[in-house]
Image 1 (tube, rainbow, N blue to C red):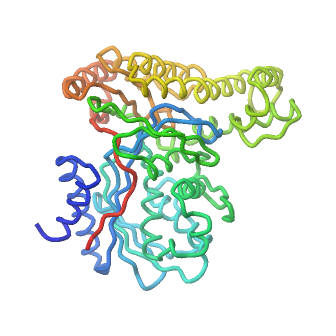
Image 2 (cartoon, helix red, strand yellow):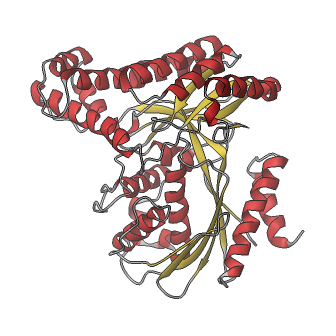
Length: 450
């Protein structure tokens, strides 16, 4: 074993990855090294691992200023970066062999619908927010994260791109970074702003990737703790505590096979859910004579009953009164009732009540948020039927994945039961569906290469 592989493997093991995952991730970093060697990148290299995440509960609450429960997973993106002496950037997908090359410039025009949209959008924003003589980089990435499956592969790629370019140009030493991005919650807010095209502190708005989302994904990826679920509220990001994940339980993730690409087919649906929350806040605030930035801040000013009545009487040209009322009811139920009760149940080891609250989250998501598809509804229901303690769809919705919590000793048999039930209902998804076992993993981190 050469020194590079030994250092990578040791670094992964120190972060709590089990032997099988250490071997798997090490292969990803080997692919990254081969990709950089092939394009004759420099030898002064830095390595990072950026995980995906599971949204346990808290559907579409983050951009409303609400709360959610999240965890990083042990699938993710391996990143290896070599600085350049010019302003050129070359991203290489070391698994599929695809490349994207561009100049680090504030005038970049990202390619919507292509994976390079994410690194190019990140690079454009860096060039605008950190002016001077930008230093380019050769960046190799290799991922075992299922794309467009609700595990935030898009946000993970934004963060991987930022880590690579920031490392090459030593952004962490700049005045702007030290002033506004010195904590992980601040960095999560900023990276979410890059993805959504929003401003943050002294950084002006710019083009995003095309979706109007929040900072939940970035927070989970940057702030998680191995073996724990994290509880956060948003706008801005505020940690509300952690919950130790039961030592005898694991998380089984089922990717439905229904692609939920936020910059593709599902973008309009995802943005509609976000737009509904914005309009509900605006309409109710105007009717009640108050000012509020989001639904959470509106709730702090006015009780839910008055907001509900205001929305029921609304006549908005874009959405019906029922659309707005349902969006608000979902937010209140999910953020203010389900999340606190579920957190209390799991902290007190009341697994039965935990399961009931997660079931309610799944039901209300389908009834009020209306972001479920038949495949995710069936996956959540059959997981419970076949022995899961709790199960729910997560992510943007309109496809994607479902998580289930189950005893670790039963996980292999549970996966078989769950897969068989799902594919019996949806046999055409046999080649696209994917099931894997994980536990809450560590946040994104750098691996020492010396």
